[in-house]
Image 1 (cartoon, rainbow, N blue to C red):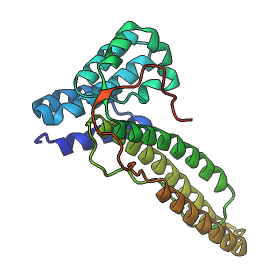
Image 2 (tube, rainbow, N blue to C red):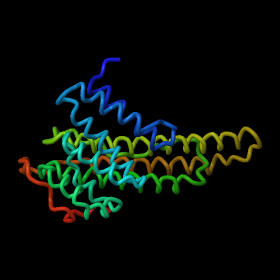
Image 3 (cartoon, rainbow, N blue to C red):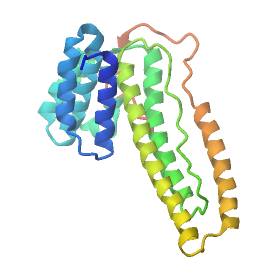
Length: 255
């Protein structure tokens, strides 16, 4: 198979989605393969190598392999990784004292326009998880046979100033995809169960089901409008010149 930027993007998304949904994929081997294949593409593939190294760094640190994680972070930054917001997630804060981490962070450059989007992307990750939990609770006990997918904010379409933004867009898309897959699977189980109630013993309540369907449709519409309203909008006149990332520890990860 011919390696292209688009094929590697799809491969990376599939790997991360499989990892999040516990499909048994060997994500570490897959990420190393992406690094190797991205190198064949030259400068066009550098950001994909950065993405794979950043994910390998996260996996290593999560497993307590800090030295390995920092080596992958170093390689990610060399290849263009610059998501300084991600490096302020609470689980990473203990690494801020490590001089190797501080050196890697100090080499990153970002524009204010891209920094705005980084904050939006990470905030949307948190919102997507919260909304998925809320939807799960709201759908408990529904007797209708409809299926309500999650309402997800659209990914930004602006041309970023740095390719590192593309990495975090992939991360958001993967989280949205994993949550959507889980939600739809649960919804089909609920819908099938309600159908079975009617077919097996006739205990299904069509009047209540009709009420639940109308209530769900109203919720779905409001959630869809809310998600669309959260779409990223670049601030007029925001700076697009490269500058060092804000000082380490000065950023607060979106709550």
